[in-house]
Image 1 (cartoon, helix red, strand yellow):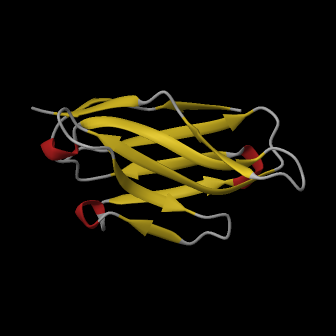
Image 2 (tube, rainbow, N blue to C red; image 1 turned 90 degrees about the horizontal axis):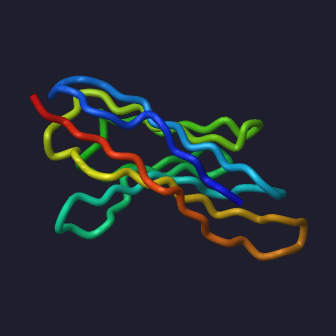
Length: 120
């Protein structure tokens, strides 16, 4: 299973970016998918998470500014980021809990990360 992220880049404060993460390979089902971020010198932290039924949860620091969504048919999760702030600067990672075959356990997979830089 591979997770491939895209959509990062440089944006000015107040701007927007949309991240995408597509899962590919032998996939029977994906339970939860999420976005995490890691800034220099800091621990990786949860940004937003969405389960297969559509329930979501967000870090307090991004509530009202970021929206997570998913397309189950495409095994893809998105993160719409609005009103970006310099403190949102980090490498953003996608994570998915994947069941590869019916009746087998779920395993955690991570993407390679995409850089988001918010600066004027």
